[in-house]
Figure 1 (tube, helix red, strand yellow):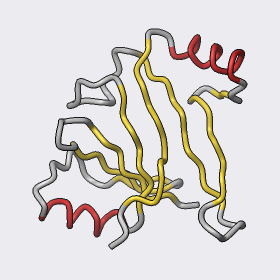
Figure 2 (cartoon, helix red, strand yellow):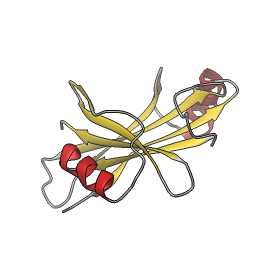
Figure 3 (cartoon, rainbow, N blue to C red):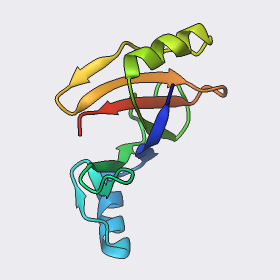
Length: 125
């Protein structure tokens, strides 16, 4: 079973997300929006299958990364999220929440071997 197909996003805590977005826009040229920045790319050899990776600074006191106490969270793109969750449960991986579906894909959060919260995303590209 294919598990991770790419990086879906990089999320990190900071004191002032708006100032951080502005700094990256000014100094590194990121085209930012209220959520951060989106990098578009093409998935695999099919040059018509567009994909994206999200870069997002979060307020330093966000609860979104809990139960992890780390300053970052990585989102991985996956295929067949529900089957993967069942496989991970059998392997003893901690599943933080249930699979949620939005118009842009399905999400679930797990904890890695050191307690880092990891977001898994099955996108609707």
